[in-house]
Image 1: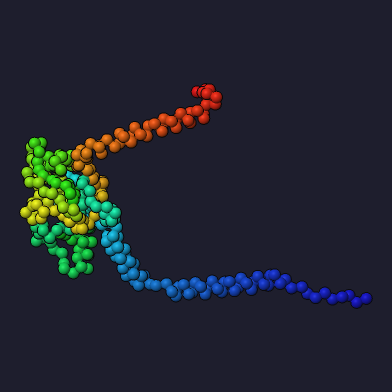
Image 2: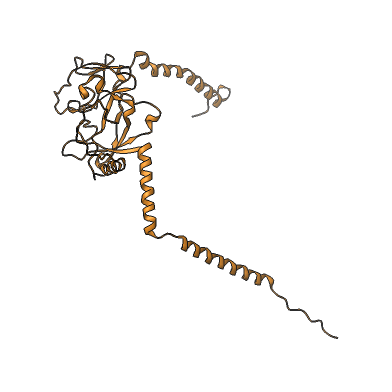
Length: 301
C-alpha cells in the first residue's frame, strides 16, 4: 500500500520574524544615517547658542530683572559703593512696579531725571546696542557703571509733604517724624541739614540716600524743590538683593519709615481684627471639644 507523502512543513513564523527584523535593522541604519547627516558641526551651533543666550539675557533684563552696580557711597551701609571698596552688584526686580507704584521705604533704581544735575562722567555710547553691551560688561566689572542710573530710598510719595528737621533732627512727612534705622553717619554727632517743606505732586517721588550726609538727592538736585523730585515713570525697578561680592549676599531691606506716623485708626487695625476673631475662635473650640467628649464626659488623659 503506497504511503501518502507528506509535504515538507515551513516554519512561516520563523521566516517572517527574520524578514521583519531585517527590515527594522535597515530602517534603524537609515534613520541614524539621516540624523548623522543632519547634525550641525559645533562651529555652526556655537554662534546660534551665543545668539540665543544674548536674546534671553536681553529679554530678562528688559522685562524681569537686572543687575546694577553701585558706584557711589550715597547708600552706605545698606549698599556698598565706597571709595576703595568693591561696589555691590544688586538684583533689581522690574516686575513689581507693573502692579503698583513705589512705596515709602523701597530702595529703587531709576534713570536720572532731566532736572537733576548731570555728572558729565558717563561714558556710555550713543549707539543703543553698544550701550547695552557696556551695561552688560559693567555687571561683571568689565566696564564702568552708568552715571545716569541712580539708586536711592523712597521717602515720600505723591500727595505728601516732606521737610527737615524736628528738634531730634528727624525728617518729617506730613508733620510726623520718620523711623529710619537704616541711616548711616560717619560720625555719631553728625546731623542732617535742614530743608524747607516740599509737597510731592502725584506721579513723583521724594528720594534720599541712607548715607544722609553724603548723598546728592531730592534735597539738592536741580536746586531742590520740585526739580529734585523723581518721576515714577523713571523708576527701573526695586533693589531686592545683593548678589556680589559673595561676602555681601543678603536681601535689601524696605523698612517703611512712615510706619510710626500712621493714623491712630490704622495702628488699631491689628488689635481690632484680633478681638473680632477671638469670639468665633472660642466658639469653634467649644464645639470641637463637645464633639470629642460624648455625653459631656471627658476622655481620660
